[in-house]
Length: 146
Image (cartoon, rainbow, N blue to C red):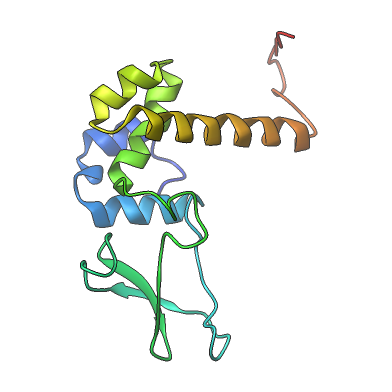
């Protein structure tokens, strides 16, 4: 999936987020989920494959040497039951300045789930600002409220 030149809105309008496999690939492509795993047995890179949806809620996993790991392991989704498609929608709600209650109602999830991910978004944004050497760009005005 080419996520570098296509906006979220264009992909959503094209129906790319209607299938959970596409949502999972999008989360891998943009780095929200780890893009690779090392096999605990041989240390080679594991390959992604379809796996039992009973054991792996997304229907895909990392596999190598008889080892199977969830794509969620070690990610923001590790202890969450929400779908990949719902996770993709949460930053959209955040950017629209929806309250946690409004977003939860719109997405059909618990308010505490939305609050958790809103906190994750804020923490990652703060971290990016702290580690960035430049805000804005040529001809850009950046205003920061204290």
